[in-house]
Length: 160
Image (spheres, rainbow, N blue to C red):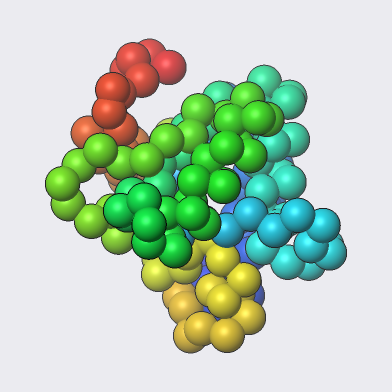
């Protein structure tokens, strides 16, 4: 097992690198996820671009976002992202649980995870004090993948 502490903007580069390295599957859960049309390179939109490219090269991508009431601002932010991700072939949806999906995590190829406080938003990489851990450990990745599947409704088949 290897663990790397990601402080503030380190998260952006680590996620993009892990997305680009993924070969089979990416699962991501997030509370707030922004989509920023035309945002320059070196910003959170790099995550969105790299995920779309991963889907284009055949990586299966599942994205789960928190669902707010339709008139709340977060609903519009996450709904826009879901629509854009789906347009690029990504299976993106709102969490249907009655619980608040406040967890923020990634599972890459069931071998690597990133877990931390970062939403996928401009504030998370420019204004907030955020931390995350990048962990290479197939056992932990398998456990977190199982948790992701428990949140994803209806869940993708275990083999997918």
